[in-house]
Length: 187
Image 1 (cartoon, rainbow, N blue to C red):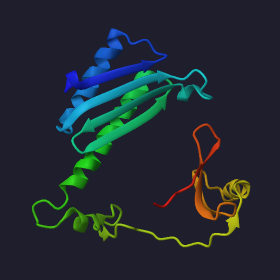
Image 2: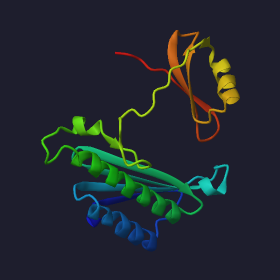
Image 3: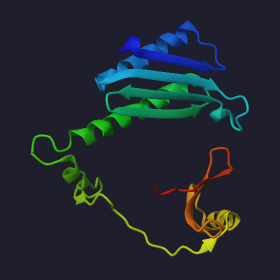
Image 4: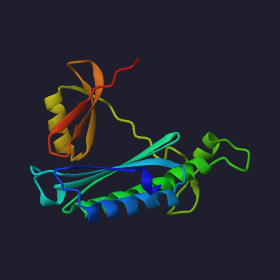
């Protein structure tokens, strides 16, 4: 697969050493999943990042028949970010292979087997949805949702009923510290 590796750089000079290292390591990903057709690697340097550990980013996207796997990692050095992204992809590949190996050999479909997930702590089968949470949504504005999210200590996301639009929205914290809002539409 080593000839199917595309490398793009942004604000980083692509040296022969970096190119050989990336080609070798990304080219070896087909040892984990032989159906990979293309690996696209993007190495970038962000001068305006707040922390030095976020200045270099490596994004790897694997394309194959019927799947796309992607990993993005930021680190203080470009090759360190690349190595971490490769490690993440190896874990994703193992999960992908595990999901697609279900239902083979015993006549059960993948949907039937997907309902049985092994709990690693107890070793027993647990249901696919391990926990259900119910709560009452009180209508609130976007500003009230931000305040509520901070007060509850929710670091990643907060679901609320938007009083202005009459719909359920998801407020989330972005990497740069600002907030994003997801407004689902039903077709």
